[in-house]
Image (tube, rainbow, N blue to C red):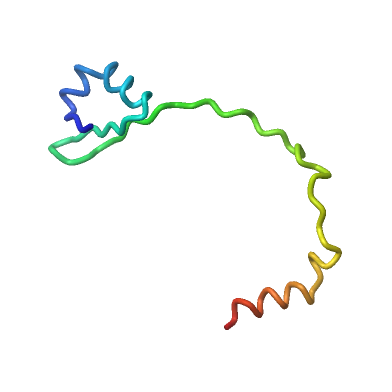
Length: 76
């Protein structure tokens, strides 16, 4: 949905509800898109090291020969 600034001032609560419900809400200034309302969603805090021990790396992961092989793939 698109609304002009005047409409947005008068109907901000309704526009915010529509954005929260997933609708794309654009506010226009002088007939041109100016801002988009998007819902604020809380995200869970990241825990440093939460996947420690979950992944195994090859012994060759950081060897010079492995790095050169990767570089060779991009030098085509």
